[in-house]
Amino acid sequence: MVSNDKNQHLNELLNFVIAKNYDNLGNKLEKLVFEQGIINFVEDYAAPFMRLIGSKWATGEIQVFEEHSVSMVMQRVLNNIIQTTRFGNTGPVILMCSVPGEWHTLGLQMVEAAFSSVGARCINFSGSLPTTQIVKASKEYSADIVSLSLSTYSVNKLTKSYLEDLRQNLDLNVDIWVGGSGAQKLPVMESNIQTFNNIQKPSEIIKNVNAHQNLSLSKKK
Image 1: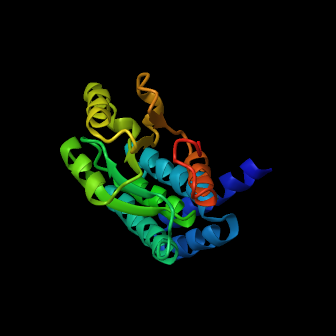
Image 2: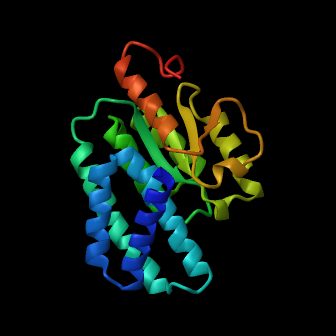
Image 3: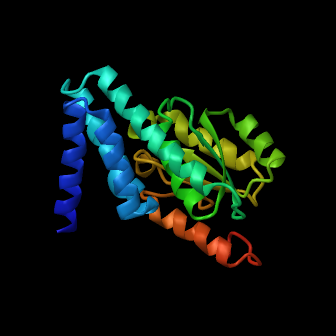
């Protein structure tokens, strides 16, 4: 039943795109945020919907300008979430960026919306950074976590060496989290580089961090 409801909502969103009714698309997305909650919205609707749009673009059913229009609507919805949840957060400081070769930044916004909603202090660089810059930023912002977004299309032979180089140079007290559709395509990584295939697990870790301020981050896992 839940799956059927989800598919029905996704089809309704797609129909708004086909009709080029972007106002109703935005209203529907906002309604889903309210009805489903932020975490479920990101995991069950925002991410699957954008994957659906990507597949429709790949087959020529949706034009590039339509994909960009959808992305702009989604960005507005996610930014609204972030702006209403980020202020006053006292949770872990999370630096967010993508790996080299990853040009999609919408995934970072989805993660920022989810993490901000559970109390994290997110610093989203909205793109890729050299490992040297991430290391410097982690010291500047006293980061607890570096969260990296990785789509299926950006996984290549250099991705593993990039992550290993980051781990080698980053303070061991700073965790590395890798998420996105490409995370599960990575080869076996070092034990202190965590990969996630959904948004619920890392969000639960952050909530646990907030509930146990006197514990180290590693113990809260």
